[in-house]
Image (cartoon, rainbow, N blue to C red; front, side, top):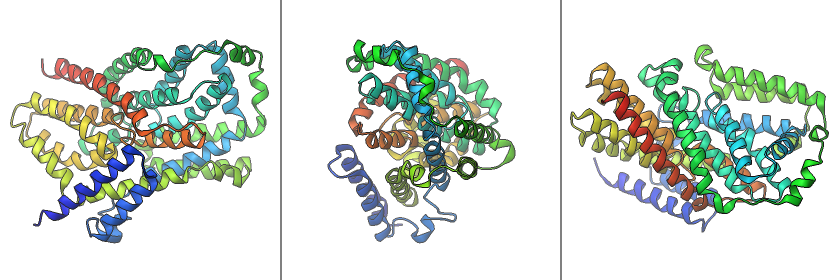
Length: 430
């Protein structure tokens, strides 16, 4: 088999990633151009990239995003995000770090039970609103929330998309994830809260006069339509229950989100133009292009080759294998988006785990899950939640650059990956 397709796919991906990182050209234009070039050169499987066995586009992610964007767009019309923003500002006394801990804690509590994208889509509008009220930059708080969400989401089967893929492939249950992943996720989350105090210290601004104005506000007055809010919250609750039960019911989270979006529009009779205006169309298109780019790497065997090279380097040293899976996944997943990366690597990990005894095999799966989950913080395009928040921030007039996000993400990934590695060593190999 000729090596040129793999070389061509790697070069196109690397050049596109460079353009995304330097932000010289609009990122949507970059991924569409790269995806089109891969299709033109026959590096992706023709029309099958859109559907079928070789589908490179994860439509579950696209439709989950679309459904949640509509739901958030409807809820926004009730004024509840303004209410929560004023409440958060008052509760934190306007103190920057206290506010960050409060917002990060809300994110951290929600993330294990909702997927990361849903969590950040609900918390980000509150954050942008409270920062406007206090006259401070929203970027540090949004970045901290995404990083926290990716860490806390590792705790459960449904908290982070890679976990769903791994759970399905390895036959691991919701309770298995709770027992093995929740303890280290809690430890990493606490470490991150302390790290955030240092990482973002130069960004913390306190404006007493702004807080004085917010302190006098009546938060309840921000809710413009209580009846609409009540109906919205009932539908949102049912959607969350649907997310939580999807492993039992077999109904995909994307279907739950779309049904929820339709139900919310029907029961609230929300203004169509308003909620459609809240849909981040550019973010959805960016995902489509990115998925096609990664499909090019998958179809030409680049990711599989990297995976096989990593596993052959392990031999029969299982702790070395676990170490490779944690650190290797943390690095590679940061460049390829951790969802397609996990889907591609899962069969390779399954082959390695099958050669070990069952207990060691499971330890390898947990190592892979931790590396894949934590890789989501590695760069601004490493996880779906990151891309969504960058889109929301840009729309709010407070854009976050690729490197602004990534420099905090790298530090966080290094710290949490070291903690995860220590945990795996102590729990499974001593």
